[in-house]
Amino acid sequence: MTRVTASQPWLVLLITLIGTPLLGLLLIFFVPLLSGAKRLGRWLKNVPPWWFQQGFVALLIGSIVAGVSLWMQIKTEDDRSRQAKEDENKRFNHAELIEGERSHHAEQVENLRFVRDRSSLATPSTPPPERRFAGLDLVDQDLSGLALRGADLSNAKLQQSDMRAIDISVVPATDQLDLPGKITNAHLNNAILYKANLIGVNGYEADLTDADLEYAVLCAANLKGARLHGANLTGANLTASAATVTDDMWVYGWDIPADGYKNRAADLTDADLSGAILTDAKLDGTILTNIFYDGSTIWPQGFNPPPSRPQP
Image (cartoon, rainbow, N blue to C red):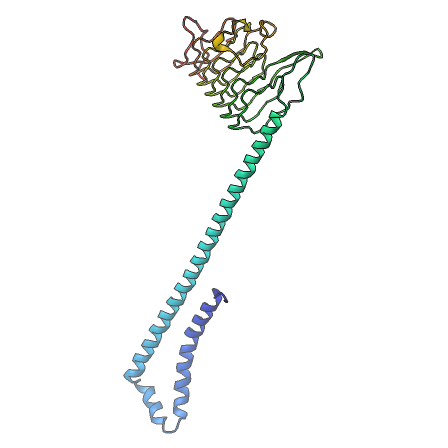
């Protein structure tokens, strides 16, 4: 079926508007040439009859109506074409969005498989497999219970991930070189790190906003500049010694040295603890230099925190 283009109705309108007056002129010119039409010609020159006047007016009105009708048809066709194009674009964008979501999910599943394949216990005599997970997208994934000592999760996307009882602690003295787990600048908003083994982890400027660190072991952890706004650190151990780990802080069988790591407490220098919950947290020796906290921060009973730095 041939589609009517916008140029064809305009051509019809142009022929109608130009052709109608020409047709009238041709009639007036040829009528006197007809047999017995001279009188009629002279008469028409003087006073056009009423039917001629009415006919001309009717023809003019008809031309205007036809022109308006054609214009409306063209406009309607253009509107339909525009709407059809918009609908097609919407369908294309929707399909593209679905395909993007599928691709994103497939990427996350592959990332999770890659991480799980490298989960194993490691000892000083048995170094861990290469665990370079920096920048991986693992949002809302299940990493619970994985043994990832010395893993590099710098800049990884771990929002809402289930990391309860995960072990990303330091691997001490491997070929004379310590391998700390890294979560530097990682995105751990709302992540579950319940009873996680984070001994010696490098969490410089990690975003732990609203994360669940309940009963996590953070001996010697570097949390300088970390964002712990709203984080739950109830019962967490940030002291220099993991010997304070009690039964209710049991960390799923991870081999935690009694002296923590090099007898160092956690370092929270410049950390944001506004709104954080530290009920029953172990903070003896924890470095709290230049920290920020507010009236909603809950400290362990009897603990006297240093003055907060000004609100950023």
